[in-house]
Length: 114
View 1 (tube, rainbow, N blue to C red):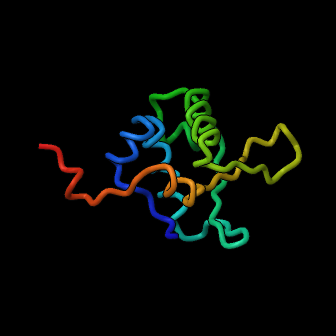
View 2: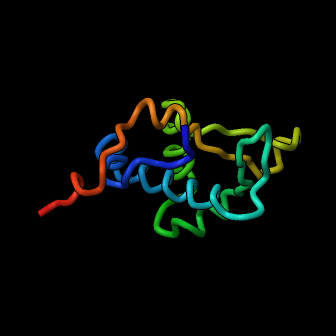
């Protein structure tokens, strides 16, 4: 099992534009140097403001609903690193095994739209 996502068109077809976009953005952050590793899994810390800066045309509540839908599908996992509920920083990772089981990987050549 590799930590890669299917092609964007496959994600859009399976999840919709908003969910696919958020999943791809999260995957990008997880691939950056300096992410926190826990038991061999990369995690990133993101505040509501950091999500909002990536999606300035969306409300934080919209992004949160998208993330919750991805969590319900088992594709995104959340964790809190601080017991204080006021602290807004959350840890996020992608459940790549669930992505692989849920969304078919198609070769890029099959995804080309005429």
